Length: 279
Ligand SMILES: O=P(O)(O)OC[C@@H](O)[C@@H](O)c1c[nH]c2ccccc12
Image (tube, rainbow, N blue to C red; front, side, top):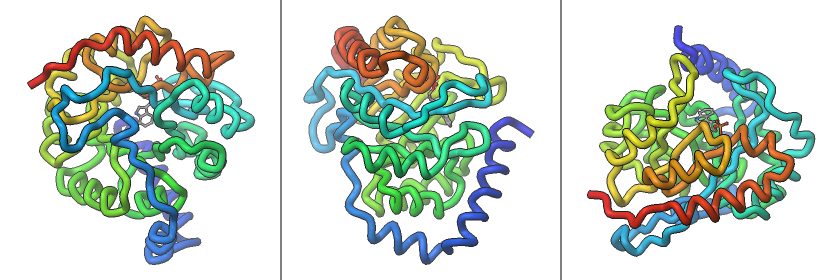
């Protein structure tokens, strides 16, 4: 069984515990009652009805609240996720990602709620989405963006979940690891596409993956480089290779001043962004 299968098995078990407390109809009603979602696509520099050339050249940072990971174990204590989120916002993050997977990443919906109460930025509910329930649940907790991992879903599920996400007023970060997965993301109409440079089977990082795959993403989609940022040099590399946004967890939760780190990522990353001319 792959790491991904293993994680998803736990995610499904935990989901059944929550569903026993609030059933499908209950969670759908809670989602419908939530205040409207924020426009995460626009926050990431996406342009709906214009040419990509109209886009500004700022590199966006998606800053992640991440307590631990399967590859690295414990990363940071994070006694107050709300405090960390305020620093992320003050530093100039465009979106905040909050991991809610419990077993491997130490996240929770409680963390998500704490961050939601603390900041106005669009929030990504970062989890392994395998059921519609989780999408309703994300919206009920005030999420604006959900994660859809191509490797974990069939084409039919991808299309269904993306449609539900948009019905609820949210957008999806659709995560790919290979050319084939990018093509599948594009085929279902994803407009925020992430290339995760962490290999899901070996858990190893290969930053070069981003440069090899980014050009395959159509120009009207927002391109996100995910994982492996250690310092501003890595940010500059991703920006030069065509990232519109970067998703950063470990480096920020470990930094003594995440606020300053984000500010320098935005500044130096934006300076390194090429004029965008992709077919
Ligand atoms: O901590 P890093 O290397 O900056 O990575 C952040 C983010 O990309 C990573 O947490 C991630 C990317 N895709 C995921 C899917 C599930 C859980 C976590 C992830």
